Length: 165
Image 1: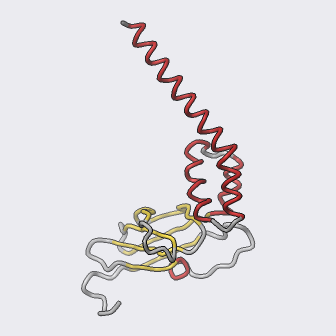
Image 2: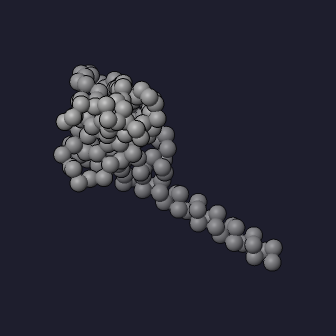
Image 3: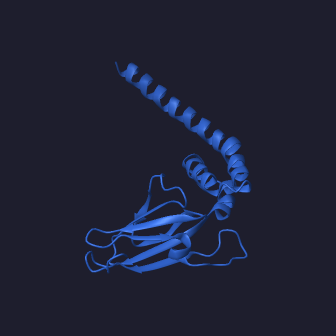
């Protein structure tokens, strides 16, 4: 019986190692070139999504590390009070699902470059909706990825926001 258990454990480990090796090979030989192609074609959001998927297999790979500043930048979002949920979706695609980014305060969170609509919510407070430009403002950078983008928002309690806002 002990040999059967040992054989099952060895088989399970072997399958996991082979699966991981296949994922690493895919990330390096297929995903990385595709990320570059998507970025070059102006499809930054798709390039970012593929890079996130590849990162799960190759982690801090130097080639992927080189691509991150091309397709993303670090963001910081602080709210008063803290504890607000931050979401984003591609600008102009009202049917797309909101993607949860995190809970404030967010510090140096990687975000894809491009036009997004941002939603900040906290129970008992009015929801804030902003475009990327409206949330972080305009910046000019001579290097890909640009500087870190920071947003600070004071949330208004529900019922205290003037009508129509």
